[in-house]
Length: 150
Image (tube, rainbow, N blue to C red):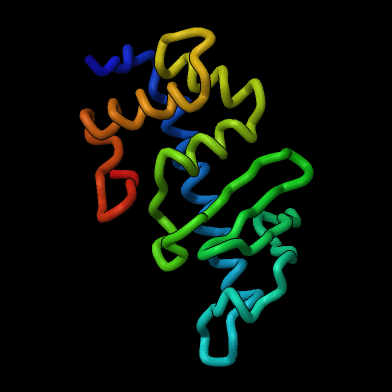
């Protein structure tokens, strides 16, 4: 039987989830502005493998890979990896959330633990439980191949 989330206080984690989505949207917009061709499209194979974009007055490193791009903010250590669906900046999946909350270090782990009401829960397990809980409560919705805030 699959374990279910015992929800704790969802306010802080849902605010951080919104912050993540907003950052992903902003970073993809900055990436598009920096690397779009004359016709307005971004062709990943035609841009440098590594670079930088500005978002919220901070420099973020970016690295293209496969069909996506990874962003890293050196000052805070936040990482956002858009491994696919570059044309849908509002969507995310459990893997992206694991990477993001993991990049927040102990603060991210604590946030997840509190939201699940389970101290010591690994990031991957916490994200899995919370995604199921958020789908059940309508905080996020499933869209083809991904999730989106409701």
